[in-house]
Length: 247
Ligand SMILES: *Cc1c(COP(=O)(O)O)cnc(C)c1O
Image 1 (cartoon, rainbow, N blue to C red):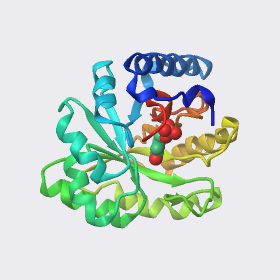
Image 2 (cartoon, helix red, strand yellow):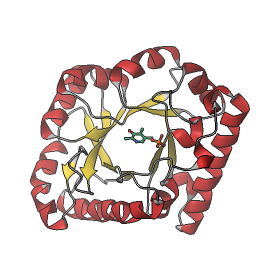
Image 3 (cartoon, protein in one colour):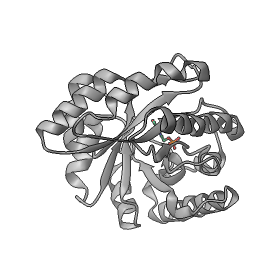
Image 4 (cartoon, rainbow, N blue to C red):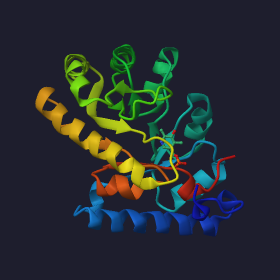
């Protein structure tokens, strides 16, 4: 872990927070330029799990308006108290019994990792007259501890297409793209091949699962978002580099 991102008490010091936001934005823009991309294609999702409400409110007042949470119970009070102008992203594993509340509170779910979950989200969203954007979480590293569609071996991708073709037309859902998490490492360059694979998987999905434009690539966190942006991320999910260490 990187010292720059673990100063003491950062989430409680508002000036530190605003400096971090500026610094992360500048690093995203620079990475976009290196990757010959337009920085406006990249959305910063501020991951607010484990952060106090005051820090999240401050981040909102500094212009961040998209926040990511992993746990429904932790997110609900924040969603109640923050401005309705915030867009909330569910980025953590969703248990089936929580699918209803997730559809009611999160317009975007990055962590759709099974057909069963997609069906439940679809049913509840449709009953409620909503459409939620979903991303399919892919496990490209093959780590057994990771959730996601098994995709570490490109020769196995073909078994994903029939299932994903069934997800695409489900009512109440808009299939927007793919999400992944790279394995933990001290060297951010080890994430790059994972991000490249997600981009390749996106290209393959466009060909084999037509209908969706598969626009979104949600990849990159505090320690590897620059690599992710260079490799095509459209959403980066950043917690500690913005807010400092979690509670
Ligand atoms: C916690 C988390 C993040 C943010 O992690 P940081 O290292 O704090 O930037 C991003 N994505 C997911 C899925 C997470 O669980």
